[in-house]
Image 1: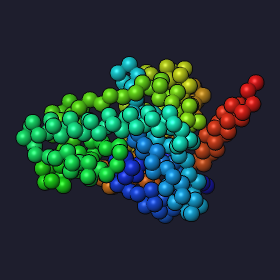
Image 2: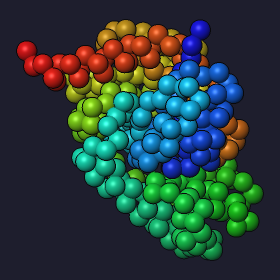
Image 3: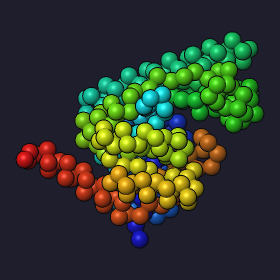
Image 4: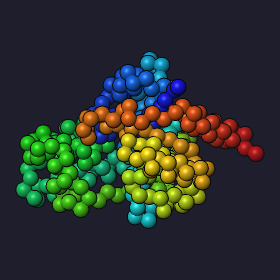
Length: 281
Ligand SMILES: [Zn+2]
Ligand SMILES: [Zn+2]
């Protein structure tokens, strides 16, 4: 039986592994397919593709976009992306700038609260273009200002805590369209965590291709619920661990094993889109 993990992060966003390290773990755990889905970044895809090729693992280029629909936050996974697509890269650069400004604002709020964290220490630790709250949490821990990242989130960084800053997001409909424009498939990430069920029909109308039924934080009942929804709306089924390395506790790779048949369906969809585009009716 062949398995895939289609939701992984590296140090090109808020994960701690390099693409090579992550591929090494995938190989050790016997995965046949890995997809990289760093937040607002495709930078790790080329090195990960190379590492997977030398380990005889099938690789899928991806990203995870933070979007919203009617003020509801939704994470969109893009798969089989053309990582050199100019429009995709321009949009990603825009949201990377949003992330960097958000870090500056969160540090300013911390300073205002009397917590002497320096912006540069967060950027130095993040060492990537897509910094996020986990980097602030780790920088606070490293500076001895909190005991651990969990405390940083609890006291300061969680939504509505004193150093939390809302994030400007792209519209989910635009996100779906952007992923399609870059030749990819658009998938709603971990619907069980975001409680986004009510917006599924609107995203399906906008062209959503799939839904992440299997995720480390989905219960069996949740997975079954989303399999049923996938069936009802004719959506493709994906799954992944959402591994961030050691960023949020233990590495999660290996906790979700998506059967290969789902990858075959994803590939068939991408192929039919391509041939459809090449031979318009
Ligand atoms: Zn997510
Ligand atoms: Zn993720």
